[in-house]
Length: 191
Image (tube, rainbow, N blue to C red; front, side, top):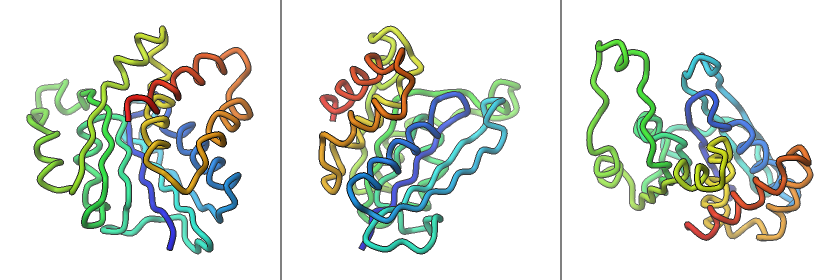
């Protein structure tokens, strides 16, 4: 039996780096790993989704609807958008941030209210964290992805804790390593 994790966010939030780090950590832990990405209009603030599956033997990179163990959302509306992928009893980890889609900014739609409460009715467990606030406290809001990765890592027993910082050092440019290691530790402690 493997682990299915869906990461979703908005272009520019670092969703793809987080999914790459997750996949590398799972491989380093000795698992077969498959990953798939959907970019959409990512450079224009559109939806970005990455499927990461790992286990003893994984055949497909795509998580089927109703089979996601953990939904890691970088933005609240994106969490709501992808809940149909959650399995019964699945876990939602969400950044408590609202990024208005173009339709809302243009006045053609309204941003849903009480998203965390709605998610709680859908999922067995919802954890909402202020990853963007923590990233800003660290001096760079762009590290919110690694704060969220720290929150996620705390919930994945299959990957030893020491693997995560090792992969951050390996995959993140040296000038950003210290910031990202602090961001990871912050997320780990938030969880």
